[in-house]
Image 1 (cartoon, rainbow, N blue to C red):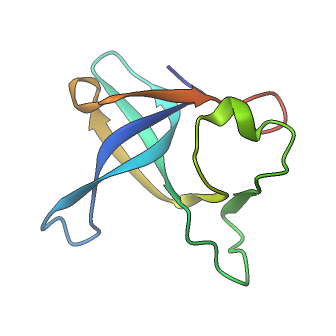
Image 2: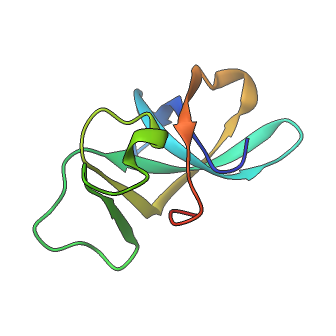
Image 3: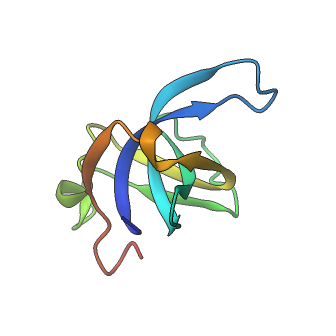
Length: 96
């Protein structure tokens, strides 16, 4: 599952709730995965820990994302595999 774009209930930073979001699997453990937050709200200034995926990126189609997005490597969470709703796509060699 490592390198896959998935849908998961991503927790808010204050842990009061979660929202179904796309995420990139960074680590695939036995019972859980570590995922990075993905947002379609791309700031004017990309954070150092951000990876922008514009619609014209050569691997955009394989991600399964619907809009240009940013992977926020500074926003990660450990999630039980049972909570992964489904796979959207996969990161190609240039996104890995």
